[in-house]
Image 1 (cartoon, helix red, strand yellow):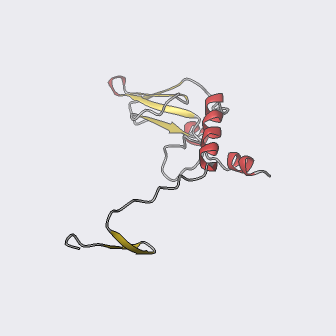
Image 2 (image 1 turned 30 degrees about the horizontal axis):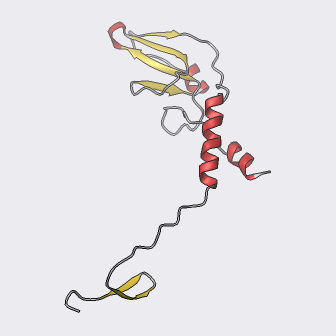
Image 3 (image 1 turned 180 degrees about the vertical axis):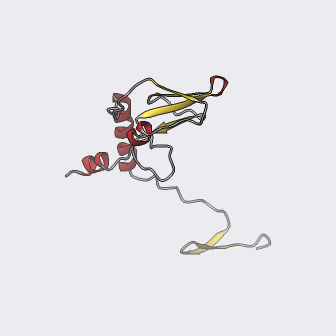
Length: 128
């Protein structure tokens, strides 16, 4: 298996389930409408929002709402989203960036340097 293919296969979902200790990929987004006492469960949102929760299929299917609240399910079956062209391009860019040679910093030129041993330098005193 080539290195690039191994990296692609080892990539985890960018959007994991919001439930604690769940590492499954998110397939649905839960949003609360407090004014209507409603929990809305729909397809995975395009962007992660701070006041919504991404859920895996297991947690989305078992979702219950507090007493007196209504659950609105926009979908009954949740399937993982296929990688988009943007996801694949971002992954390719990351692989290219990781494969580049690290930039070598140019050595500092210090006036008054007398000797050097490893990372230590001997400098000439101001009065010398």
